[in-house]
Amino acid sequence: MGKHIILIGPMGAGKSSLGKRLAKRLKRPFYDCDQYLEERTGVSITTIFELEGEQGFRQREHKILTELLSHDFGIIATGGGIVTESVNHALLASDENIVVYLMASVASQQKRTSHDKSRPLLQTPNRHAKLATLAAQRQPLYEKFADIVVDTDRQNIGKSIEQIISQLEQP
Ligand code: S3P
Image (cartoon, rainbow, N blue to C red; front, side):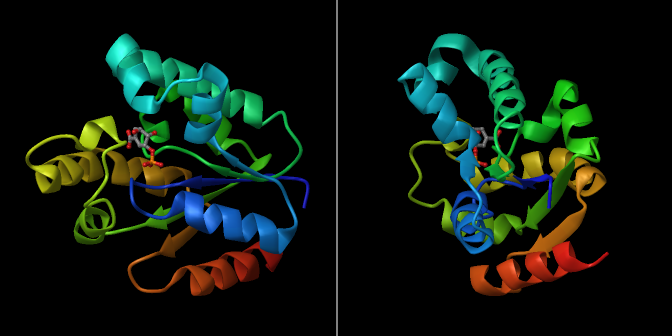
């Protein structure tokens, strides 16, 4: 399979955990955009937001995705906001990549991120409202770019991986 697999979906959908396991299973490298950005800059995502604002972060995120797509074919976990920037749309729509959308309801996102302190957008008193607003804006975009859709509320990571592999094998 000479293509990258790009994982998209909201915060708390499990892109990093599933991505690592899928990469192991397919014997491919795993790349995580946020982690790569933190390693590259030597500071946390929170610090980037503080110093450069969300806009600065989005510019860096785009550069990282572009760079990772030039690496060996692997599994790339993106941040939940990757779909918001039109510069990323051509990358997501390209036939050279397979985009997997990990769907998660706002309720399960809230549960899975309840102790989170590392996501700047979630450091707000009403996390549920924030997640719901982001979902309303982004869901149509996740759907638009998805080649494969996985419902992480309905099945565990193992089952989601089986579903992805079986859909990848389809001609
Ligand atoms: C963001 C999601 C985060 C991270 C940043 C912004 C977003 O990644 O990129 O905090 O805009 O949804 P995860 O989806 O991996 O949490």
